[in-house]
Image (cartoon, rainbow, N blue to C red; front, side):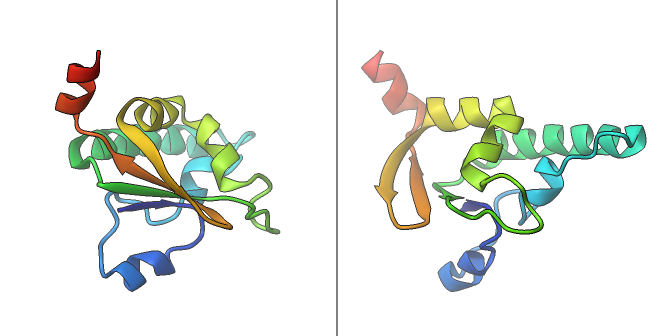
Length: 118
């Protein structure tokens, strides 16, 4: 699974490891403007994140909603737009399966299924 937001306890509760190197979205979405070295590092880990997501194809992606807090100044579901490649993966290969109070659960839709529908 991949949990997008600061709800990493979902990994423990589901007894599953995270699908990418980053169990938190904050290092991928933090505003690092004004620090060119940090921005370059963030660009690099974003590329790594997208590559791992494409390779691992987690069965479920859980997006946290309504989670503004003093550390993150935008909700996790809005922060997806900061990584356009992630948005594309979510839009093209996942279906919204379930909406709960603070979560959107997306399920991987196999590439083969998508190709048959086209």
